Amino acid sequence: MKNEPHTKTDIYILGKKVFLRSLKKKDAVGNWWRWLNNKNVTKYMAKGDSENTAAKQVAFFEEINSSKTDIALAICDIKSSSHVGTTALHKIDWAKGSAQFGIIIGEEDYWGRGMGTEAWFLLTDYAFNDLKLKKIHTKIFRENLPSLKIAEKCGFKEKTFLRKDVTKNGDFFDRYLLQLTKFNWKQVKAKRNL
Image (cartoon, rainbow, N blue to C red; front, side):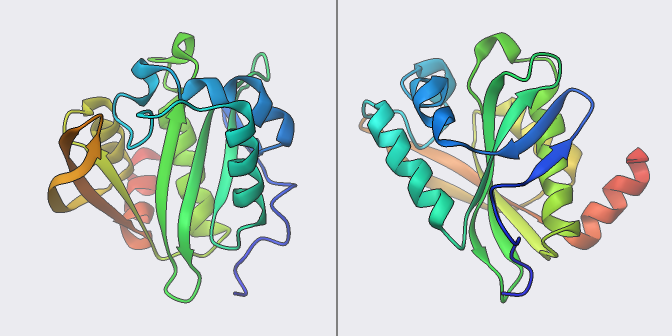
């Protein structure tokens, strides 16, 4: 477990449009819990089929904060410092150097501004360079074209098509399992001059 961060309470990653920072309990009782009740926000998530509350989000925050295999960060607008989304690495396998990536831009006013793309790039770089992970995977709904496009920009490649992979509101949905290796990430960075 030598690659684990010393503490999850002092992570700060600066970008041009957003910065990522450690989540705080006040985030859970802010707008974060409300995002998961917004059908537009959760449309392409495995969440959103049951009502969320501030208390549930605080419990989730405490679970994530004490976890040795999860790192979740607030995505904040660099101009206003507003908490507009969350991104995370889940199910980190420190021995194998792998993790599952997730992201949500919860504030709809911030959609289409490239903030999710930048947050995705920032956390990916952090995962490979600071945490020394070797590969990251993510699952994306087949219909979620914006996220599929961002994943492609980051260098993620389709590993498997997961037919009827998740049930939500009584319906089945297909998802893609995509993977990015540290080697491919280095190529993406070189190509994009990151």
